[in-house]
Image 1 (cartoon, one colour):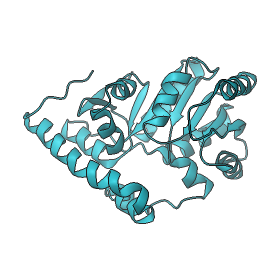
Image 2: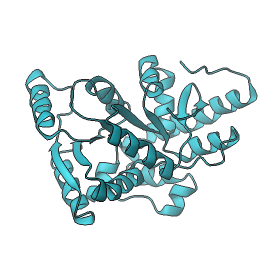
Image 3: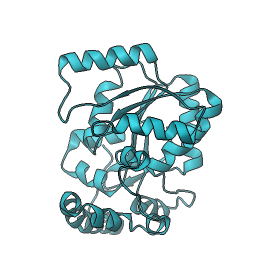
Length: 254
């Protein structure tokens, strides 16, 4: 388990892409089961009103600093080596590592056809990548037949890394529930990475990602879906984090 920084009661792992990749590679080699939450402001704010979700984040194998505010929080707590571990970048780095390690991948999530398209695009980029399955779930909880089908498919393929491309907190709750049910080693919830790497949605320019402005780019691309999230969550996060920094309010890790 990595060290964590307390951000409003959520333990964000002290990581950068290199150390995250090393930790995941070790878990895969040693067959240590766990799920990984790629967490930014949205996840932290969802956890403020959902104790069960906060518990899921804090019991994860890794809770990576997905957004720049998580990195800034780490640096304010003296963690100078902490860097953004962005879900789409983590996916590419793990796929590159997998070409020589023999690691097997399974893609779960996205809209119709997205998981299959993602697998095709990644295979073009990484020809030696072993993709052993994809599954597109409905926009609701799986029924008994669908769950049995998924368990059978995963049982036959036994993936090392099971990628989950839903939305937060849906993907984290899915991982916490299904990790014990499925014959997988590591589950990683990466949300929009499915859309980005399949080519369905464009990513923000690197300079916007590094400066903490990716949210603004995504808001301009999807204003109806994201306006409420960003205009509510971002200012509220800033206020709460200021209160935590100044000691006005305590946010214990639970």
